[in-house]
Image 1 (cartoon, rainbow, N blue to C red):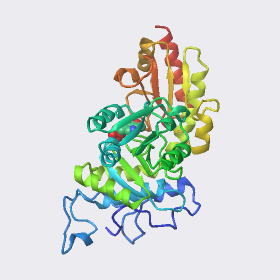
Image 2 (image 1 turned 45 degrees about the horizontal axis):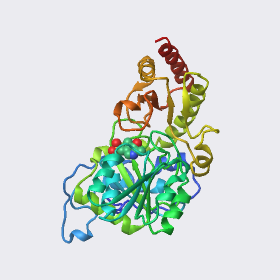
Image 3 (image 1 turned 180 degrees about the horizontal axis):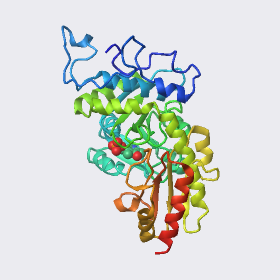
Length: 392
Ligand SMILES: *Cc1c(COP(=O)(O)O)cnc(C)c1O
């Protein structure tokens, strides 16, 4: 309960002192060492806290406003998302969509112009409709080729998703952020796919790093979570007020599980990115597989920009099989890859995206999330499943 309440990274000694990511993640957000106290205190389950006197002075008062377990996680994510030695303030949410809503719905007013990616997360479509219903002008443009640049005139907010889900296109975040700031717009980046160990949007000029913690950040497929990180204290305060007002709060147990998972974030992202590259390279050898995309492939269209702004290329590989039936047979034949949505988990998953109807993708388009299994086993499983699917 000793930590200050808004999730700032105060311990400059830990962050920015040259330690590597693997070192930083195992200590991120932990309280100062205290004899006989646990290194990572357990989840604090409390709807309210003992509250003498003036609530304004209290670190914790009511459970919708703040919770020590959130504070630990918020400090940790703040340390990982913060650029260099700067501090960043994180607010955790019940899900990625709660975090996205906190920025998009709290920042925009009737008459504002908002620029969204046309190829982003599929719930940006109903989000767009909601914003338009409130009199917000929404413009969309694809992520690839920095096409959002042409939509920025008069904009109040630019929303970037790089790499985009599920198409895996990448845009130059710094270039777009500079152009948006010149026009007075704020910039938010959905950092779900990359995680803060893959790229740091704030360092690349964004005002908000927003993400679903449900995916690679927590990586075990057992938690829904989201967060918003910003440098500017006023922006951070308005995000925090939004959470309190709409009540989109994570449970303390989820927050604690997420914090616990962060210790392995470097191990997981490193291994998953290496496995994803091995899988992508193996898929490319197969004539029945088209359009294999992964930002780590050196000749992928996204690679030149990705290599400049990303430190790890993520666990997602996308590709297209001949048709719907082929893709379904392939998914059913996989032994080590579960047919499931979501991504970023320790166990590999894949799905035919077309089954949801929301993304503009071919019927045979598969999004695969590569886990931490042995790469050779995954590659052998994928080859065998392609053989089996090809037999009809
Ligand atoms: C999953 C996802 C979200 C939504 O996150 P939830 O935790 O499911 O609400 C947002 N953006 C991207 C890129 C995602 O993949």
